[in-house]
Length: 182
Image (cartoon, rainbow, N blue to C red; front, side, top):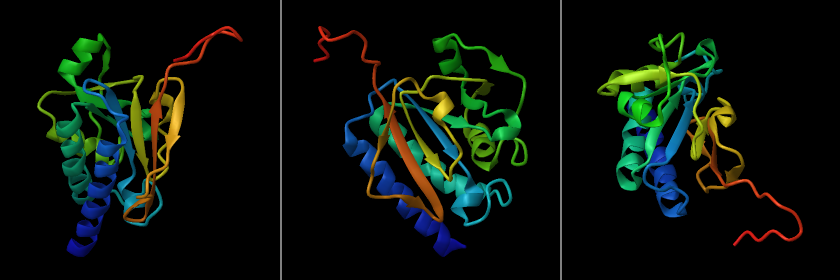
């Protein structure tokens, strides 16, 4: 298991570096993470959650947060309708409403449950409009991204055995033939 966790750490470190160097993340932006630790382990989503894997992934994501000043937002699994774990301070700053639930491995997912335990003052919200995000293991984060989502093509395409998809957002282009965008 240690060898596999070292691989996950290396995969995540590479992805974090690519995000840092992309220029797409700005301080204060929301960055949503959907992660199936089961998929990372090579199993079917929702069948083999692992806090050990979640811990390795969170450690690397916190490095991204520190380097860029973004706010990490963790998407729960479908059993909690893909609700999101955030810090209470962020909830207050964004004037969001929290919901009464605590994610656990079998209802929320191991990644969100682990992130909840690690935060100083965690809360769960139903929805958010993030500026960018990363989907590890086909967890479908799109519902929490601002319009218009733009897929990113990084070199590192896997974390463990799970596919990774990144996206950033851009403002909508409005207007007609006379509109200028730059």
